[in-house]
Image (tube, rainbow, N blue to C red; front, top):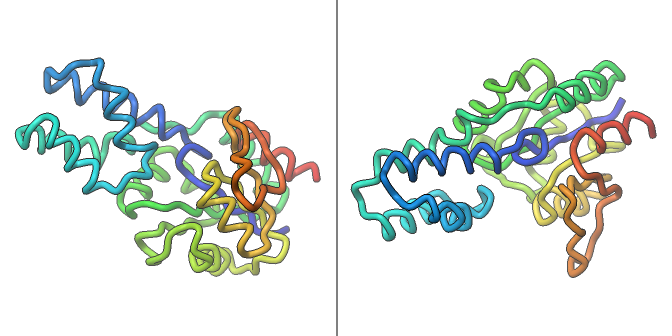
Length: 214
Protein backbone atom coordinates (compact mmCIF):
# COMPACT_ATOMS: atom_id res chain seq x y z
CA UNK A 1 0.00 0.00 0.00
CA UNK A 2 1.17 3.60 -0.57
CA UNK A 3 2.42 6.17 1.87
CA UNK A 4 -0.01 8.00 4.16
CA UNK A 5 1.49 11.23 5.46
CA UNK A 6 -0.28 12.86 8.39
CA UNK A 7 0.06 16.25 10.04
CA UNK A 8 0.25 16.23 13.83
CA UNK A 9 -1.15 19.42 15.40
CA UNK A 10 -4.90 19.89 14.97
CA UNK A 11 -5.01 16.88 12.67
CA UNK A 12 -4.07 13.84 14.76
CA UNK A 13 -4.13 15.68 18.10
CA UNK A 14 -6.05 18.73 19.29
CA UNK A 15 -3.18 21.14 19.84
CA UNK A 16 -5.58 24.09 20.03
CA UNK A 17 -7.43 22.69 23.05
CA UNK A 18 -4.19 21.69 24.76
CA UNK A 19 -2.66 25.14 24.35
CA UNK A 20 -5.87 26.86 25.45
CA UNK A 21 -5.81 24.89 28.71
CA UNK A 22 -2.12 25.62 29.24
CA UNK A 23 -2.57 29.32 28.49
CA UNK A 24 -5.49 29.58 30.93
CA UNK A 25 -3.34 27.97 33.64
CA UNK A 26 -0.50 30.38 32.85
CA UNK A 27 -2.73 33.42 33.27
CA UNK A 28 -4.27 32.09 36.47
CA UNK A 29 -0.89 31.17 37.92
CA UNK A 30 0.44 34.67 37.30
CA UNK A 31 -2.68 36.40 38.64
CA UNK A 32 -3.35 37.85 35.19
CA UNK A 33 -6.83 38.58 33.80
CA UNK A 34 -8.66 35.52 32.54
CA UNK A 35 -10.15 37.79 29.87
CA UNK A 36 -6.69 37.98 28.29
CA UNK A 37 -6.96 34.36 27.16
CA UNK A 38 -8.30 35.22 23.71
CA UNK A 39 -5.53 37.80 23.25
CA UNK A 40 -2.90 35.21 24.15
CA UNK A 41 -4.41 32.65 21.80
CA UNK A 42 -4.38 35.25 19.06
CA UNK A 43 -0.69 35.96 19.65
CA UNK A 44 0.04 32.23 19.44
CA UNK A 45 -1.88 32.07 16.13
CA UNK A 46 -2.67 28.41 16.50
CA UNK A 47 0.99 27.56 16.91
CA UNK A 48 2.02 29.20 13.64
CA UNK A 49 3.54 32.30 15.28
CA UNK A 50 7.29 32.13 15.81
CA UNK A 51 8.20 31.34 19.41
CA UNK A 52 10.41 34.47 19.85
CA UNK A 53 7.57 36.65 18.59
CA UNK A 54 5.11 35.14 21.06
CA UNK A 55 7.57 35.52 23.92
CA UNK A 56 8.29 39.16 23.00
CA UNK A 57 4.59 40.05 22.79
CA UNK A 58 3.75 38.44 26.13
CA UNK A 59 6.70 40.04 27.92
CA UNK A 60 5.84 43.42 26.43
CA UNK A 61 2.34 43.10 27.89
CA UNK A 62 3.16 41.62 31.30
CA UNK A 63 6.84 42.31 31.92
CA UNK A 64 9.94 40.14 32.06
CA UNK A 65 8.90 38.72 35.43
CA UNK A 66 6.68 36.16 33.70
CA UNK A 67 9.60 34.72 31.73
CA UNK A 68 10.12 31.45 33.65
CA UNK A 69 6.46 30.48 33.48
CA UNK A 70 6.18 31.75 29.91
CA UNK A 71 9.13 29.57 28.89
CA UNK A 72 7.39 26.56 30.44
CA UNK A 73 4.17 27.42 28.61
CA UNK A 74 5.87 27.71 25.24
CA UNK A 75 8.13 24.69 25.71
CA UNK A 76 5.80 22.24 27.42
CA UNK A 77 2.29 23.67 27.74
CA UNK A 78 0.62 22.01 24.79
CA UNK A 79 2.95 19.02 24.67
CA UNK A 80 2.10 18.08 28.26
CA UNK A 81 -1.64 18.19 27.61
CA UNK A 82 -2.31 16.75 24.16
CA UNK A 83 -4.33 13.56 23.98
CA UNK A 84 -5.02 11.12 21.17
CA UNK A 85 -8.75 10.55 20.78
CA UNK A 86 -9.76 6.89 20.65
CA UNK A 87 -11.48 7.19 17.24
CA UNK A 88 -8.23 8.58 15.79
CA UNK A 89 -6.23 5.82 17.44
CA UNK A 90 -8.59 3.22 16.00
CA UNK A 91 -8.52 4.74 12.51
CA UNK A 92 -4.72 4.72 12.43
CA UNK A 93 -4.61 1.13 13.63
CA UNK A 94 -7.03 0.05 10.92
CA UNK A 95 -5.10 1.93 8.23
CA UNK A 96 -1.87 0.23 9.28
CA UNK A 97 -3.62 -3.16 9.36
CA UNK A 98 -4.80 -2.49 5.81
CA UNK A 99 -1.19 -2.03 4.77
CA UNK A 100 -0.85 1.76 4.69
CA UNK A 101 2.56 3.09 5.73
CA UNK A 102 1.79 5.97 8.09
CA UNK A 103 4.34 8.74 8.65
CA UNK A 104 3.77 11.95 10.62
CA UNK A 105 4.99 15.10 8.84
CA UNK A 106 5.04 18.07 11.21
CA UNK A 107 6.47 21.54 11.42
CA UNK A 108 7.91 22.59 14.77
CA UNK A 109 10.70 21.97 17.22
CA UNK A 110 11.89 18.39 17.45
CA UNK A 111 11.83 18.05 21.23
CA UNK A 112 8.31 19.43 21.52
CA UNK A 113 6.80 17.50 18.63
CA UNK A 114 8.41 14.21 19.61
CA UNK A 115 7.13 14.71 23.17
CA UNK A 116 3.59 14.93 21.77
CA UNK A 117 4.10 11.84 19.63
CA UNK A 118 5.37 9.77 22.54
CA UNK A 119 2.93 11.12 25.13
CA UNK A 120 -0.03 10.13 23.00
CA UNK A 121 1.32 6.75 21.97
CA UNK A 122 1.51 7.73 18.33
CA UNK A 123 5.05 6.39 18.22
CA UNK A 124 3.61 2.88 18.49
CA UNK A 125 0.95 3.50 15.82
CA UNK A 126 2.91 5.04 12.95
CA UNK A 127 5.91 3.83 10.98
CA UNK A 128 7.90 7.00 11.60
CA UNK A 129 7.87 10.78 11.60
CA UNK A 130 9.74 13.79 10.29
CA UNK A 131 9.95 17.13 12.12
CA UNK A 132 10.90 20.31 10.30
CA UNK A 133 13.59 21.30 12.80
CA UNK A 134 15.28 17.93 12.38
CA UNK A 135 15.28 17.82 8.58
CA UNK A 136 15.87 21.54 8.10
CA UNK A 137 12.82 22.05 5.90
CA UNK A 138 9.26 22.98 6.80
CA UNK A 139 6.00 22.33 4.99
CA UNK A 140 5.21 23.24 2.25
CA UNK A 141 8.83 22.73 1.17
CA UNK A 142 8.96 19.58 -0.99
CA UNK A 143 12.06 18.41 0.89
CA UNK A 144 10.15 17.51 4.05
CA UNK A 145 7.75 15.30 2.09
CA UNK A 146 10.64 13.60 0.35
CA UNK A 147 12.16 13.04 3.80
CA UNK A 148 8.93 11.36 4.87
CA UNK A 149 9.05 9.08 1.85
CA UNK A 150 12.65 8.20 2.65
CA UNK A 151 11.67 7.43 6.24
CA UNK A 152 9.01 5.07 4.95
CA UNK A 153 11.24 3.54 2.30
CA UNK A 154 8.64 4.40 -0.32
CA UNK A 155 8.14 6.81 -3.19
CA UNK A 156 5.50 9.52 -3.37
CA UNK A 157 3.58 7.80 -6.15
CA UNK A 158 0.11 7.06 -4.82
CA UNK A 159 0.80 8.87 -1.55
CA UNK A 160 -1.71 10.96 0.39
CA UNK A 161 -1.22 13.90 2.73
CA UNK A 162 -3.78 14.55 5.48
CA UNK A 163 -3.63 17.87 7.30
CA UNK A 164 -5.46 20.96 8.51
CA UNK A 165 -3.22 23.75 7.15
CA UNK A 166 -4.10 24.87 3.60
CA UNK A 167 -0.83 26.73 3.02
CA UNK A 168 1.41 24.05 4.52
CA UNK A 169 -0.15 20.61 4.18
CA UNK A 170 -2.33 21.04 1.12
CA UNK A 171 -0.01 23.44 -0.72
CA UNK A 172 2.90 21.09 -0.16
CA UNK A 173 0.97 18.12 -1.48
CA UNK A 174 -0.29 20.09 -4.46
CA UNK A 175 3.21 21.17 -5.40
CA UNK A 176 4.31 17.55 -5.56
CA UNK A 177 1.22 16.23 -7.33
CA UNK A 178 0.32 14.25 -4.22
CA UNK A 179 -3.32 13.66 -3.32
CA UNK A 180 -4.47 15.45 -0.19
CA UNK A 181 -7.24 15.44 2.39
CA UNK A 182 -7.93 18.72 4.16
CA UNK A 183 -9.15 18.44 7.76
CA UNK A 184 -11.56 21.35 7.78
CA UNK A 185 -12.99 21.24 11.34
CA UNK A 186 -16.15 22.59 9.72
CA UNK A 187 -14.50 25.61 8.09
CA UNK A 188 -14.96 26.44 4.38
CA UNK A 189 -12.01 26.02 2.05
CA UNK A 190 -10.26 29.38 1.36
CA UNK A 191 -11.44 29.96 -2.19
CA UNK A 192 -8.76 32.57 -2.85
CA UNK A 193 -6.10 29.86 -2.96
CA UNK A 194 -5.15 28.70 -6.47
CA UNK A 195 -5.34 25.00 -5.56
CA UNK A 196 -7.73 22.63 -3.81
CA UNK A 197 -7.44 19.44 -1.80
CA UNK A 198 -8.46 16.16 -3.33
CA UNK A 199 -10.82 15.58 -0.42
CA UNK A 200 -12.34 17.72 2.33
CA UNK A 201 -13.16 15.96 5.60
CA UNK A 202 -14.31 17.37 8.94
CA UNK A 203 -11.68 15.43 10.88
CA UNK A 204 -8.78 13.03 10.48
CA UNK A 205 -10.89 9.97 11.26
CA UNK A 206 -13.26 10.71 8.38
CA UNK A 207 -10.32 11.37 6.05
CA UNK A 208 -8.58 8.11 6.96
CA UNK A 209 -11.78 6.08 6.63
CA UNK A 210 -12.34 7.56 3.16
CA UNK A 211 -8.87 6.51 2.07
CA UNK A 212 -9.36 3.01 3.46
CA UNK A 213 -12.56 2.58 1.49
CA UNK A 214 -11.36 4.16 -1.75
